[in-house]
Image (cartoon, rainbow, N blue to C red; front, side, top):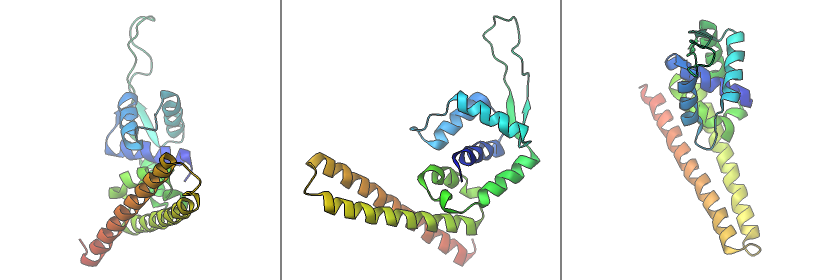
Length: 187
């Protein structure tokens, strides 16, 4: 899943919940995608325009600013998911390939797991676990090899990174266990 597809998924997923205007959509996207990923209007509005041109979302509201030309009051356009957009969202939610496991897309995918089929969720979680286990192994090797060549602060930074990966790995394993239990009990 490319960056633009992750952004489309986030926008369409939020619009599935309710129609939103640009300011509220930007706020929710920023909360969803994380504090370290600033969502600018310069990236949001072109994405909204492309989704509207594709027929995935519709715009309602006054597209021209009301009042005199010097008025600072902006028009409020509300964006809504169309039937075509709902189908595209379902398609995006079905993607369980390697891009869905990576850092860039996993958080957004996880935010919409309630709308994702069980088997797809399981594949994504298994893929994420595999990716984290691989990363943990690499970090352990790197830490063992560099221990004598780096200062204590850099060493602590490496340890901190490893702890973060191992914590996420335990969390993912707990989620997989919960998914397996749900599948077995059928609830």
